[in-house]
Image (cartoon, rainbow, N blue to C red; front, top):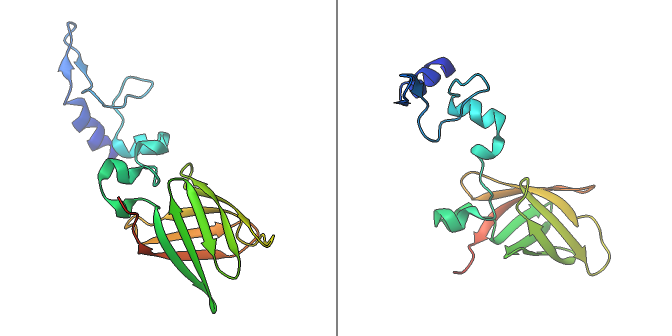
Length: 154
């Protein structure tokens, strides 16, 4: 399949003065000068097909494609609420915690709890492609699967 894609891409170029085909603008080319299929490009450069979940809503216009909003998870009988917006994060459960998040390599969360608890103070989250769930693996703690309960206000 990659061969077919490479052949299709190579036929989309323009001729130069030597009569050789040049790859179409925006085509990734291998070290040998051959066009590389989009799936191979993603394997070489993962950022070619992934988007930053923190910034993607601004570019797509779809607020469900961002982590900003209100999220709710349940661990046993404990409800955990996470609020994310403009790089700031707040978490309420049996503890009240606040801090920030970044959108690099998924979603990185760094929180400080008012009572000194450390169960949910550092974690890494992944937003589902449909924007409806956010899975956060807390360092040294549980994994929470949050469901979106509110969108950011514009």
